[in-house]
Amino acid sequence: MPDADLNAENKFYSINGEYISPDTQTRMNEYESWSKKLTVNAVGELFKKNNVDPKSIDRLITISCTGFFAPGLDYHIVNEFRIPKSVKRTNIGFMGCAASLIGFNSVLESMNSANNNGSIALLVSVELCSLHLQTEPTRDNILANMIFADGCAAALFSNGKSNSLKPKFKLLSTSSYLFDNSSTFMGWKIGNFGFEMSLSPELPKIILESAVPTLENILRENNIKKEDIKHWALHPGGRAILDALQKGLNLAEEQMHLSRKVLRNFGNMSSASILFVLKEIIDSQTVEPDEYCCAVAFGPGLTMEAALMKGI
Image: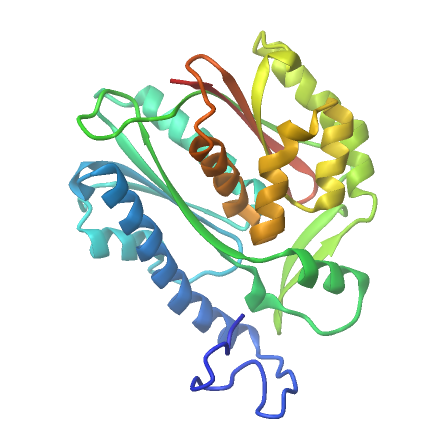
């Protein structure tokens, strides 16, 4: 949360503990400052861990729905790490929790159309949900304040062999689906005092009754049986969301463990969450070659994004 430093300027809480509701501009100023810091840390660690030269990056995708400024994070990352000025940049904004998988789709399309087999893409997601804390005691505000959190994650993709980069998964395909008559199920609007969330209490039911069958159709279209999926990266949108997915897909608790772990330890970090779950799967060192992984996340209205991967 902001104002964690006792010596910092009080922007969100007064000295006596009373909450100060800052306007959207103040929140965006904080977003710009902190998103830059978090992004530099995440990308720097990623490059160091994988021994990747920033000059090898030819595709950059930045993702966020909790703040905006221009020139944006893409510009900042290029300058901070001296990524080539000719890098192709895409910003995916305001597409909610599913945005990182939309980024996967963008990566897959660019890799498939790349002229060279040594293309390396950098994808970065940063979300600062706590900047949009709301105090009016509505159901939507209370729920959003409880489950949404801050997070930043970065990932590297390559369509060829690299001396240093050793991918854990091969990205096979991505899928998108927009559900009919769903515009009121999940919303995220810009208000005068931050961004305002709306969440339908029917969301878990809709996921169980509509999203699960749609996901099963996506698997069939890719000639993959549900039972063939060894690893499930399910967006930890909340306990009820995960419960609905577990019930609908008939998954064992072991298959839900890592998604629940991310929710328990980090909360719902919007678009960054699915990257945290995938990291947990990779770090578990249980992924064997040719084992399937399915990543699933949901976005505003009700939209669903899915990505199918295979262990390398």
